[in-house]
Image (cartoon, rainbow, N blue to C red):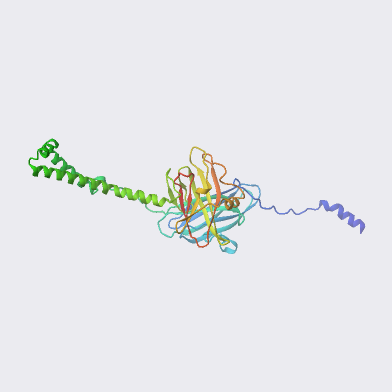
Length: 366
């Protein structure tokens, strides 16, 4: 027995030992890539390609937003465990994904637009596990196939109502000037001769001036009303520099310095209120470094209430990083989560994103 035990002890190091399975890596943004494309004739078919650029396996959670008002027609593979939607917002599809070294996979979702023939924007983000920070995001705007819709051309200037009116006034003014020349009219008024004709000339001139004034007011009021309406729609946080644009989640929107894309928006109960979080990507399209200021990123809720960024919660959502601390160099990109605290009964309607206090900014419907 002793000899047998000694023999086994000596042979033990030589026996093969089964290797433990490799643990899934925790990748960063440079090691995982998400790409989104969209196809389809009548329905929007989105293809989300996720690639692992590391030499180790990785476990991810991919969240695909459901376009506003659209219905989910098909998914491949089935989202979530057992084919049911995974954790998260009811307005998104969640796939758990495990990728081997240098492996890629394609996830597909098909949506039926709420209004046929209208473009649909959609976005997808990859997370480590079911929670945490987004590693990478991408978006695509699907345009239905069909004949191109031409933009309405402006009406020719000579068809506007004010052209013949202005022409008649000019003709009348010319006739008056030729018939009663200003020196003669002045002399007649001074000498009080031919009072009837001089009076007619003066009255006619006053009528023409009044008509020209009415014409100027009629032409200026629509533009003034349009400018006033646009100013009212900008809201209290708007500026005056650069273009202004609005769109849905997944739509790239350009303003003075930055191009913004909001990839995801979700609200969850927290305490006596709600915690709303948006995943925002931004690119500096200007030629100088630009800061991204926290107090200019606002969430509008029903009732014209505007909520400013919760800076502490935003830092916590980004793993303790202050995403507003450093400026973005020209061409640089940044992906961050922005957080707001709103009352329990409030309904979010729009995200306002600005590069600076005087920038018009962009507005994202949520």
